[in-house]
Length: 383
Ligand code: MG
Image 1: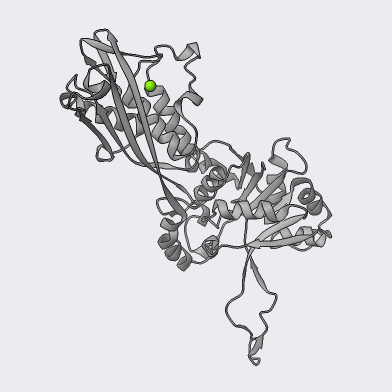
Image 2: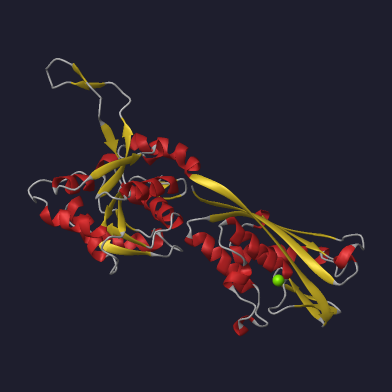
């Protein structure tokens, strides 16, 4: 099911302490807002609108650098006006397509929450994640007696909240403008819509007070998962004077035959990255039948795979390539290969490994018929 998202990041967030508004503050090494955008991208959002103040719009391109599929919108004086501005900025999308409205101050959104919201929304006008109240509730007016209150049937509503786009737009149009709703489900409830509860997530905590950031820093690691990908490639030796391996040209008395430059090291590594993020294989993205890839330098393929990782809000942890051949000798070129891979992937050199082995003259590599390459990568993405 396709869906779009509106992220409200137009608040000044003064309760979180002095200085920058909380959506721009760094959490686990990146801005709070970026967490939500990456999560929506990883969950498959077709379009994301980020609503900011005028000042926020100036820093947005830097905060979301390298991510695609989002656009900015200018917020209003209240949260309700900002949400409506965000809805208005969505492209001409189907009226019944779900839109998820989210507060930027809840950075740890997971795909599980998005999926359960979309399921809960079926047949309803709205769905929101919520947690049951576990603490005993007390009512205490200043100077009055403390009274214990039942927590039965009480829920703590979180965001994102899901609605059919047209349903939410018309509910806001019908909203009495004299009072300010504290969430979007309230607006749909008031318009007579049916709203249901989906499972909430304790990780979806809202960053409100300075002490929330300290806890969120400790949780940041739990909101990301590590994925492993592996790739394998082989090419046949043929007449030639040099060979490309891991992006480095080596003088040799043969070359590898292939549609592109036949750099088996880069091909295996590209497949490993695509595998880690479930994006098929190199042939899906660069069909060998397509004449534009004839003789192509294979760093293009690797750059594309790395961009796909980033577009999902992911980052590459490390890569490890093994070249399998009797000749040429790889060792004298390993340092140059690591440097080239580190450069293409923007990684520190100690996260890039190139190794080589022979097969003791056994098999097709041992007989000198061809060269093979294997690669393994680790990638971190939103959960
Ligand atoms: Mg190949």
